Length: 78
Image 1 (tube, rainbow, N blue to C red):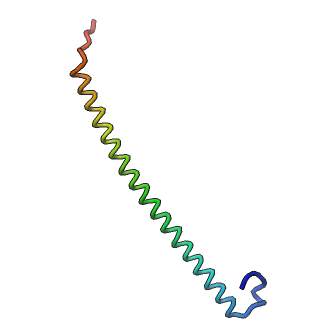
Image 2 (image 1 turned 90 degrees about the horizontal axis):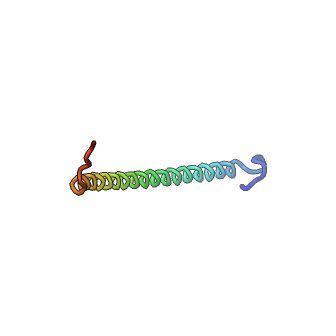
Image 3 (image 1 turned 120 degrees about the horizontal axis):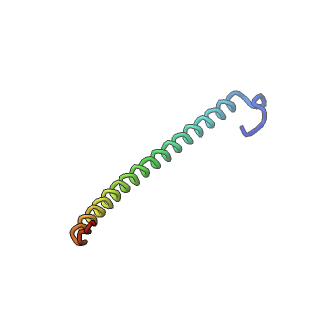
């Protein structure tokens, strides 16, 4: 059944149409859910990478500060 008034078709056609439509809606829902799950997993992975990068950056920054304290002469204050 494509288009037209439902009354022009038999009950079997209407039931088939409803079943196909419901199945398509369910499949669309499942596809959207899977896409959302993949997006969440990707965001979680990116977040873990960002945390690792932040940790490495902070470690490098702390090392640079310590090296600067050792390498640079102390300033004399008046």
